[in-house]
Image 1 (cartoon, rainbow, N blue to C red):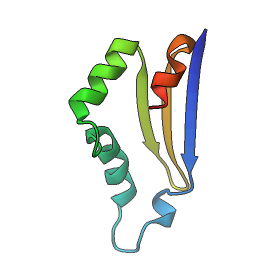
Image 2 (image 1 turned 135 degrees about the vertical axis):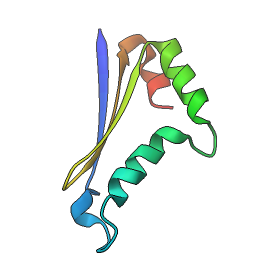
Image 3 (image 1 turned 120 degrees about the vertical axis):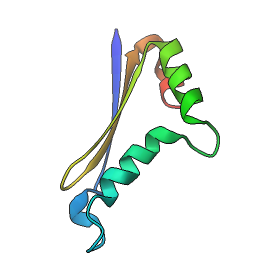
Image 4 (image 1 turned 90 degrees about the horizontal axis):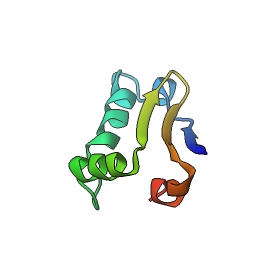
Length: 79
């Protein structure tokens, strides 16, 4: 069994401040660069060890974060 988690936030380019085109895309890409608790390499290593994927996409209306992997690892995917 395979599990996919999707988080959709109403934070697309339509919601960005005027004069800052591309800000939503930039923030979406920064989500892959690490957090206060984990570096980008640590996140990538964890995902690789789980055989999982993390995708971040931005559109006009939404930013979507998707994590996919084996259902056995669903709790680890949410960390």
